[in-house]
Amino acid sequence: MSLFSKSRSQPQSLMALGIMAMGLLVTSNPAQAATIVNRTGFTDTQFQDTILKGQFSELFVAEGRAGDNNNASGGERELGINTASGAPVTSGQRVWGTGAAKLVDFSLEYTGKQVNYIVDGQKLTSNDFSGPVTDIFFRTFALANSTTNKNNSVQLSDLKIYESGSSLGQAIGSLSSLGTATSDVDYLQISDIKAGFKITGKTALSWTGVAPARSQLAYQIKVGSTPKKKVPEPGTTGALLLTGLVFLGCRKKATTSVQV
Image (cartoon, rainbow, N blue to C red; front, side, top):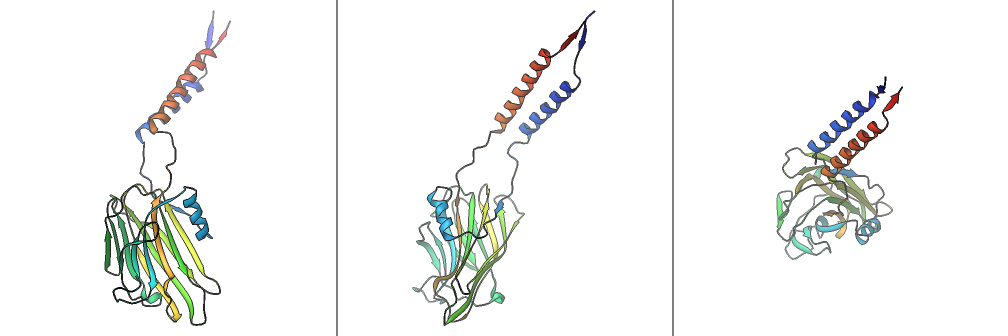
């Protein structure tokens, strides 16, 4: 008489892998929140390197700067939507009130076709940019102390991002720079943006003595994209798992033992 001995664990393993395969197929392309990237100690040189190496491509830049701290038209701009090269597409005039108590609300929205940038109620709009966005770099800069000007600081606080189609804001945090014996530059990056977005937050420029000029005290929001990461398509992943199931099934038949 022949007795066929079969392992009980193999059918269970096959069933578990089958469930995993079906789960991956059903839950393909799950929604993912934006990712905050640690950029502590990041410098302007390192940022330029990411562009030169093709790791980031700027689409547009929204900025706030010391300018000439004057509302007069024709003077230095305090607000702007710029091209990647820094040329302003549209600009605005503003008088900054020094100190943290002068925090004002701002927002930056990108629909995929239009940029809307609002600071303390003043709105700048541009239709000059289109294309995908995956990453945003926030940059703050404060010039070092001089004999007539000290304690330059700029801050972006209460930062949140609202991705297209979502009313739930994701907290990003804050970023600030303080110029003392040396100038200070700081960066914050968010990645994995899937579509259009809206950024909200508060900003303030502060100093003592003579007001800084132009971009000696400034922040920029650099919007662009990084190369696409190659990941297996959900269908490919499922197919690989199903192939594994077939392989295990064949192995099960081959390893069935026969006892006499």
